[in-house]
Amino acid sequence: MIDQYKSGSYFIDNKRHFEDSNYKVRAIWRLLKPIVSKEGISINSYADVGCGSGGVVSGLSNLLKKSGIQLSEICGFDVSPHVRNLKFDKISFYEKDFVEHGKRFDLVTLTDVFEHVTAPMDFIRRIGSLAGLVVFHVPLDDCLAVNMRNLQRSKIKNPGHLVFLNVNSALNLITNAGYKIIDYDYSRETLTAPSNVASILQKIFFPIKFIFFKISPWLMSRIFGFSLVVVAKLDQ
Image (cartoon, rainbow, N blue to C red):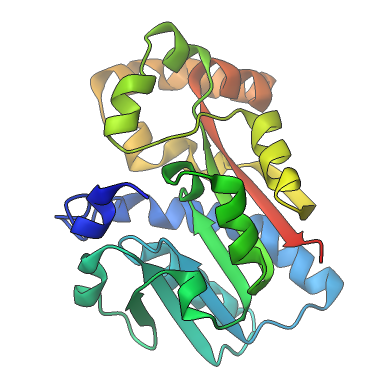
């Protein structure tokens, strides 16, 4: 894993990316809720791995509880020391590797996480061994907008993306790690997330992106990039 996370330099501002959390939570919940209801899956414990600012674990746990799911344990894990300063009601935060913690959880989320680590298949396989359901939120950076401008070099430095995926390679990576994919969809809620409409260029291109999204989310993802939500379970 890149040193900038363990050193704390990535999260000098412990609210980094917090503004996008609600959009990601809504995208995850849209896919997760019908699966939990239809399959009658029991969720008593929930952990967010690579919890960052804590926005996702806070938001999703609130939605779980509002839907009648009683959570006995809610945790956020991150190797960055900034988690020592995170404080959310009834959520425990650990500056620790999730696998080293060693406890099993009914639900685990990884929101924009495994693209930051080396050997991502091994990483998510080890996490899956300690989880019931796993929900991934995955950036799709293998797109025309990135490739034409050779942005991989800058993205490796910041935000620290080490793998560049499209929808097929993301699904293949998760499957090759030993998971059975239950469902997936594009993270359409994040289309209007603050980080996607922050710059003047993003604002100019937003109407065009929206039109392409209405025509084909796949086509939009291949031109501009997008994100994917995947609900899966390790096939043990």
